[in-house]
Image (cartoon, rainbow, N blue to C red; front, side, top):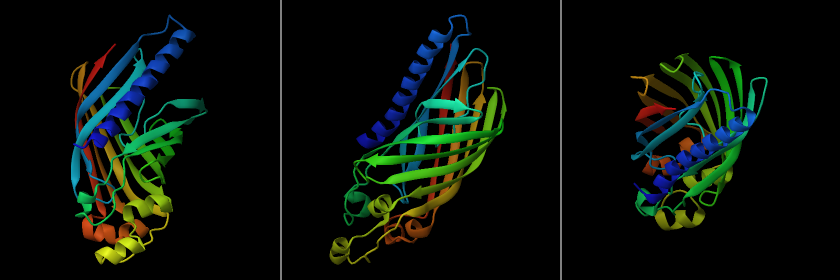
Length: 266
């Protein structure tokens, strides 16, 4: 595993832990007589594309942290959404911070042909709306700081079926968008690179990047131990799908999935 990959998923765990700490402090200020918090931590491996558009996968940590008070069920979070705290709630709406990390694409990933894309910290926000207890809509956008320096966002919907915390199944479509800077970083070929490699120059414009879906399953084996899993598929479309980078060094089909063991405690 590359150091940037470890940072990416370690960052998710740290952000969730910070959120949990902040929530606990706020709860103590509200009342000391409310039920105690429960925490569920899931840890395991996952397979994800080595870089956007890659035809290979890398093994990376799968980390999830959820908290709930008393006997309330753990709140639903899709396994592929960005991490970050909720800042405001109103009539089914939620607004908050979303951030993540994207590992680097080295020159070796493209047989030494294309330039490196560095490790990227992505920072932005999200808006989500609970249409019904079993149906949620969400959109989030994140700006790259360093690395690809582009803007990427997703629009998603999730159907959620559950029996409290005994089991939870989620399924929903995804659409990913990115601006021209992001697409040129991963799917574009400059005139200079084309002149030295023989590949055609390609100016990838911004817009729709991929469509697909995500499914998740959480199952409690005992009151403390459980399983956390997900599977995701995206199909690159439009300028990203037509890119010579994808034809020569990658695949339009992007698959990922993971399986983790969870532990719940008070």
